[in-house]
Length: 156
Image (cartoon, rainbow, N blue to C red; front, side, top):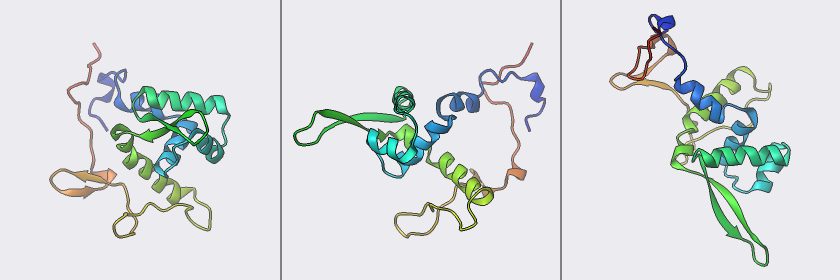
């Protein structure tokens, strides 16, 4: 917990700003599918099942924030279309996405177990998101405390 939390404004919170971009259900599901390798609108729509106008809006927002980029393609004899690829900024959401997946696997998965397991491509062993200290390595949430950062704004 941030010491003297109520002395600081939450107006410039990075988590709040992140949630404004990616914190909506359909947006997270688009990201899930992008991490699973989907790139094309019709494939996203089929996998996620949301209305086309909702998907269009979510893809536009992710492109606007440079999380996905549009890349044109053309099937033989067809018109030019766009596919959506994760950018570096989008790939940087992998840890947060895997952390949400881990939480879901632990607390809300079907009794049969998780439907998808994230594994290391080189060895096939499961990967996990974790908290780590720059000096001491892995830590638990019980060992973390928050301090005011350079962007913290004191309430007058």
